[in-house]
Amino acid sequence: MILLCLANSRMPILWMKCEGLMLLFVLMLYFSVKRSAAISPDGEALLSFKTAIVNSDGVLLQWRQEDPDPCGWKGVQCDAKTKRVIYLSLPYHKLSGSISPDIGKLNHLKLLALHNNNLYGTIPSELSNCTELRAIYLQGNYLSGLIPAEYGGLLDLESLDISSNSLSGSIPSSLGNLSKLSIFNVSTNFLTGPIPSQGALDKFTKDSFVGNRGLCGKQISVTCKDETGEPSTKPQPPISEENQNGKKKSGRYSTRLLISALATVGALLLVALMCFWGCFLYKKFGKNDSKGLVMDVSGGASIVMFHGDLPYSSKDIIKKLETLNEEHIIGSGGFGTVYKLAMDDGNVFALKRIIKTNDGFDRFFERELEILGSIKHRYLVNLRGYCNSPSSKLLIYDFLPGGSLDEALHERSEPLDWDTRLNIIMGAAKGLAYLHHDCSPRIIHRDIKASNILLDGNLEARVSDFGLAKLLEDEESHITTIVAGTFGYLAPEYMQSGRATEKTDVYSFGVLVLEVLSGKRPTDASFIEKGLNIVGWLNFLVVENRQREIVDPQCEGVQVESLDALLSIAIQCVSSSAEDRPTMHRVVQILESEVMTPCPSDFYDSNSD
Image (tube, rainbow, N blue to C red; front, top):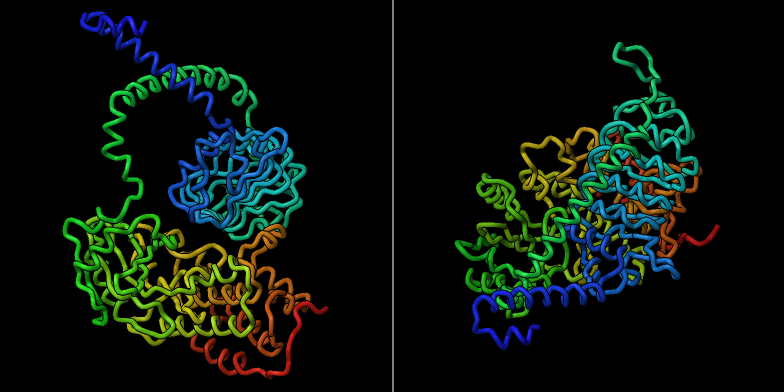
């Protein structure tokens, strides 16, 4: 038929019909190929999850549409026989974005672990469709909204940790149905109302609920009161089965039919456009996969240098900036993406890209950067200058080849020895003490953590990102913990009030010391399973008079006097009372006098009983 059409193509009417037949043939061929090469339904659900993630450390780059199933993807584990996804585990991968509701289509999922990322938005209620779930770990993110009451139907659930987020509302009484629940943690949120006292939640103690100032109930020894001020234990109404399975079911069925029809029409239109415009689009955009920074440094960009020891013109630097793309990314975080900037003479710098936050950003930005650029200290990362462009700001720092302390502690196979750990702690302390006491104006860091301590080629520590928390603070927001700070390092009073002081930095430094000593992140999974963080673990060991057990068993050359003195400092720094914490000047004095000069013959074997 198509050949007949081509043979009579001079006839206009017949040619129009032929165009339709050819388009239909192309569509049939496309969907035939698409169907034969389609990824599994679980793979489609995970690709939707990937689409909702706007930033990460690159862990999702190998998740590809052309794979037959997702079983070889990083962070994904499938059942060997059915190829259905049973584990999705992606903690500590700097995932930023929302959690796609399509994750609820993984109906054989047993474990969901997305803790300690930068996820925001609501917790999808669609996870209640994953009735085989045994564990949900979402702690240490920026999730908001309500705890889905539908999770009361996950009757096989054994672990639910959604602590250290920004969740609000009450704890659903339906969670009392989870009879198998052995780990439950909703601490450090903004939850309110009575804690359900009936069912599974009755067995959990104060540690599961601490840090929610609006909660009440016998679990935390706070009497609930009703609107009249009288004690009340009125339970929350249960979820209506009729609403869940009756009227809504038929409505959802009709909606699905409508969506399916619209999707089919949309797909036909999309493929038609692909047929007619595909070549044009490929020619225009197809070869531009590695998007650089050219759009950021064109149209009025200027270079401002703080120190006169860089032998480059603005033109030379801008020319190099225009060549940067995703291949040059060496890190990312709450303050921006970091690129490696290599000049023609071999000198290397780190470039931090910050997107503009508001219309009045420019004047404030330049004023603050002038202050930060004037600060030079041995234990601070040197800010060389910045590029002022229409759409973003590009800060130019010295490049430190040793990477971050976070990488050195948790991602490298060779553990740091005792002397190296002490030197790193001392360097970080001196850098922070300079910011608090000696520079003008004095600076509160607000985000002391292992990834913000960088190391040079000799593993000497440098404090980075100082001043950026204030620089990027949203003046209209009173919740500064969303902008500055990382869960696990934040002082209790900072979590409650959002007000940063030097003593909140001291607390974060104390957590950092414990992290260096133990080799464990502040919210390590081994702590979370017990409802603790690294400070809670330390407190437990102190009560048991076993505090020396906190030391990393792989650390060589540990000295008893140094260890005991360092533990004493850490305990003071992480005191729940800000007034009881020492200043950073005092910390440096103790480190120099009691930690760095111990008896050299007294060693501690961390593997001994």
